[in-house]
Amino acid sequence: MQWLEQLLPGSFRNVPFQADSMTFVVGHETVVRDYPFQDLPTVQAMGEATDEIRFSAYVIGSDYLDKRDALANVLNGSGVLVHPTRGRMRVSVKGPVKVRENPTAEGGIARFDLVFVRAQARRYPVAQSNLQQQASEQIEAAKLAVRKDFANNFSTAGQPGWSRQSALSDVSALLDKVERGFAALTADVSGFKRRIRRARSALLALLDTPLQLAELVQDLVTLPVQVQAVAGEALAQLEALWGPREVVFDGALNAPLTPVLTPSRQRQQRNQVAFDLLRRHSMTLEAARVANNRVFVSTQEALTLRTVLSHQFQTLLTVTDQTVGFDEVGGIVANSAYLALAATHTRVLRDLAQRSHGLGRITEYVPESVQPLVYISYRLYGTARYADELYNNNPHITHPMLVPAGKPLKVIAHD
Image (cartoon, rainbow, N blue to C red; front, side, top):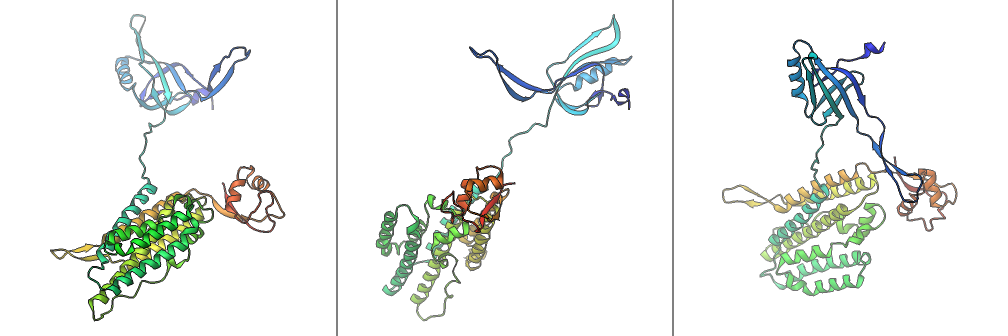
């Protein structure tokens, strides 16, 4: 095909024009810097130059005035330009356009000095939901709802001494588990034990203020920030944080109330169920908080923890009352603790799903001989910069220069 046959009729926003000459800019912008006592300047590339397109254009004919006005009316903003030799493109009109007419010398023609700049659609900042922050706020709201629910269902007021002692024994048993499971994980072990001792000394008085008792329990099971940075997979980390697995993920709740003879026995059972729910709710919400603050390195790590938390929340929601009774007109009153736990379940799972997207996959690599980590990193990734990552993900490595042979390494695939 001859070049004349490839020429396109020029137009802007579907308004045609003719062109005498056309110019455009190619190449990159550069900045030339001169320095004293330096014979040659320093040149710094600034990226691709602005694609500026210039036309010496005109409209002609007996109706040129109508054509001139039609073209002048569209020469603002952005639109689609049909370039005679470069085809269709989106451009913006640059600056005011000069229009020249000379009726005595060349009547019936109007000339335009057109300048266009290649443009893309204007982009504005787009607000996005911070799912991690939303989950964190929902966890705190759920903790408050759990405390209020416990205060509404736990009471030792007017109860005999044996009933109060039973409630005291339940709280003391939880403190024992917390002390065994958490003390070794805190940086200040002696300070943590002092907190436990102070809590024990205040238990008898706190039995009469269940809201403060619930706050104490949640405070004691709240882990310091540095504990959440423990290396290893998230599920193994949680098992280490909580100590015995049944502390968080044990079996069914205590048996439901039985028709015993005395109101004191019924109150004792209600207190036991209320405290058991407080313990489970608080532990689960703390596990969710740890997951919310956790920085994941692989998709499997995040999804494994997501599965565990989802199962735990579903278990709790099946044993938590959805309603607390009826209002004055007979309508059902929803349990705020149930609603808060359900909302926390949803937001935590959404946060984990979003943060797991795009992470690397964990594979295995088995060294054939004793090798240094820098060599393994270079062999797998073509660079030695992942040696520290390999060391952190494989706690069995005792020395970075002596990786044992024949033992699989957990390796993150960086595609």
